[in-house]
Length: 504
Image 1 (cartoon, rainbow, N blue to C red):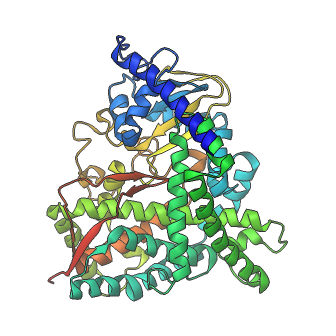
Image 2: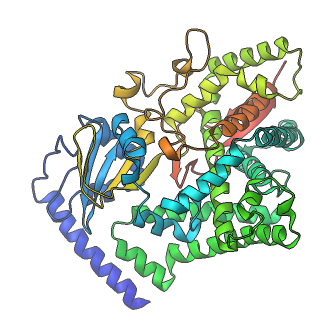
């Protein structure tokens, strides 16, 4: 252990000496209009990466904004080369036009394999196609939509609203991000596995332990992408020390939770009578291994819990300082209630949710600025040329930057950094979706998110039910929260709020 520490310290000092010399005692190279990043001899763009990796999203957004085609090329020691792009034409090329040339890639899969295994978000080729085909059958059924509507309604009226009402009566503060994550966790477990962990209700102790471990595992796995040198990760993993030891413990807790679900389902053969996602993957022939089913469960939880809770957390933070947007949402909800002869407390049906155009625009605008998945990386299989002329070599990384794209004047105009829900509304007041390649919040092309429509059902149901009943006051609403770059864009330290019943 002492030898490993000494080796790491020696290598760090060598690197630091080289960096200081190049940074302070030589003339730094001018920023290239072709790459955007400062490229140093031997070290490439590594010094800039080390200096800014704690603010990776904002740093790379600044870089891309100053590039002629919003695409930057990077080079780092260890043959880590690639591009980062916020150009819609390039995004369409990699996600659709030349889709087969841009898989997840071996390194991406390796870094996430311990956590996600061979689940749909960490799979390529036939393994991905099989999972995609099975899942698409379930998402395209009317029965699943109705199932989601019923579950969301149950969770709102029996758990979420009573929880917020108690907070309003007692004056206690809540971490709204935590509340939304627990809501989404209960909902995805019921939808995907027909299991109610009761996490939002406060009676699911094992579920709460799982959620803590899941958050830790997702954050630590994401941190693997930010290592300056890959051999440091390999050594930490081999000796089971530091963050890799914490990651291993967290993954063990996550796996135990998922294994319990599978074991319960298999022992009583209940999958034969169920139509949830897990039952579809088990199938009557029961050919999929427990390990594969575990990967399915973890991927579904990641998709169903972390993305919607991230989007709504940022949405409620934005909303807290914009009474005009709240006013417009309330007017829309009141008009829908009046038109259908409903009162507050009645359940919104699918048709009512579909008519919430301004609310959907407000949520979409929040996700434009704070996309749940801010960056996504592929690998280039064969040499290629992007539509903007950027040359790619085999084995290079190709990252599209959804967070930066939401802040590009070339895409959204001069008000690109302002929150303007009206940009999504047509002249008739209906919400008009944009190209998925300009707005890749739900991915695009063959890997487009299957749960997009169901996500909007959940998000609009929650937002409408909360806004019409409560005033949510965010602590320090004028200061943008620090984001935590995990597998999704979470708010670091949560979102502390106080709640008051709205005067009707």
